[in-house]
Amino acid sequence: MAVVEHIFKPVYDENSRVLILGTMPSPKSRKNGFYYGHPQNRFWPVLADIFHEELPLTNEDRLAFLHRHHIALWDVLKSCDIEGASDASIKNPIPNDLSMILKQAPIHAVFTTGKKAAEFYTKFCYPKTNIPCIVLPSPSPANRRIKDEELKTQYQEILKYI
Image (cartoon, rainbow, N blue to C red; front, side, top):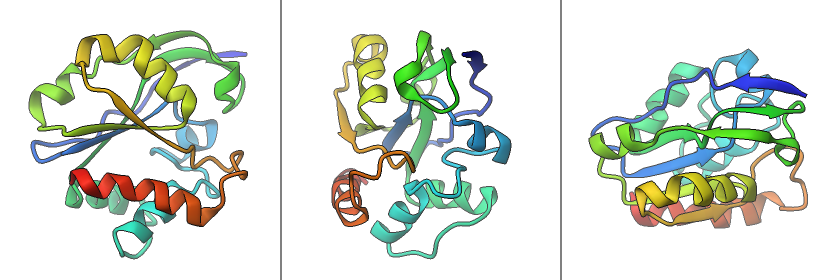
């Protein structure tokens, strides 16, 4: 188990309408320098599909994609003890302060990518934000019980708030 500090800044601007929160960037994401950076993670393919766009391949393209679609992106946790990328192993979670995003962007909905992110959001963030979260399935390569089509169907909920 290792202590992991969040290394990415939140992605948002004054036009962001939805906030998508994971738990903590995986080792592959940290190595690749951006959110959902594992090559088998389905986050970017699913978003590209629901927005009818080409898959953004570089971190710069992903950043532009998020801004173009008014999506803010961050994680619930600022730091935690974690084994690899296993959300189930998380101990000593410390939440991020979401107030900077919420003060500067007209966020209409908060989504979490997985049950663990929702659990931490509900425990630590909801009492301060008073915005309930909408739980989406984890796009992680470890979550293969949710098929691609079902993942896309559930992620289309984002479109209602953009």
